[in-house]
Image 1: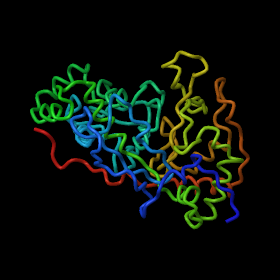
Image 2: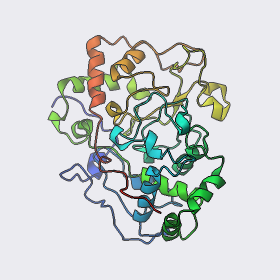
Image 3: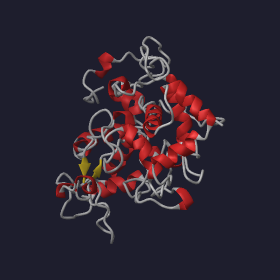
Image 4: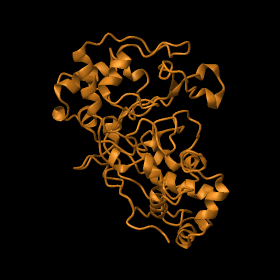
Length: 358
């Protein structure tokens, strides 16, 4: 009991009433207390221990409703939302792989490869900017971007995509029910974003130890790793807060040892300070989302910690917080043990629809 605890979020333990499954007892999916323009009543969501309430992150112009979330789930898994009927959002964000695809870089239509690894779709509700380079300002914008990427879903433009979907009478009916409107790019984005906002992960062993006070939730190695994570290993300089991300962009040197450097955030901002910088990902579910980094170069968490311990890859634009850490082999193993304790729950119930609109 001597280990000093630091809550992910100040006061969280006081503000969240935890039930037997580590969920906030006051939020139940399907609450119909308020009307909503989304074709149904608004819904709230059970909040796993360790997280902030997602309700605070829902945009006012796209409230969560049960029907909209279900429409988004259907769209997320439907391969007809690609030019060749072969690629769904779930191809790169598979439930069984914590909504990643297990590949170094993702594959789209006609087996074309993209240039970056697919990040997890889990806990995107808490994220301000989307994609590795932050080019999408909202989850709605992110949800439709891949549809018009030539190596992902392959549509020439949104008009081509919506024209195809309008041919499906079942979808026309669903969009009328949910939005009282026709099928549009914006409505597709709103539905998929609403579904993605339900994909949350908390109540991990780390949460049960650090927030819930469950002393036996972590192994001794993971407890040492937590102290290193907050101290000598300097992880919290970027992986901070309850979602373990500062929501900023950093140059670690990834790619500077190759002949073609991905310029990352710079391609969005054209700010020289952003050359080679990529967004700090959440560490929740990190043990389930290999391979790692934006180019998927590391297959194990041990490889990742070793990379940081060596100080990244030196380059003219490297973040000045990336320095050699001088962690021993045992200390590196302890950090990995803590990272593995960030696997949680709250998303495992999601599955593909049995059938799709016709």
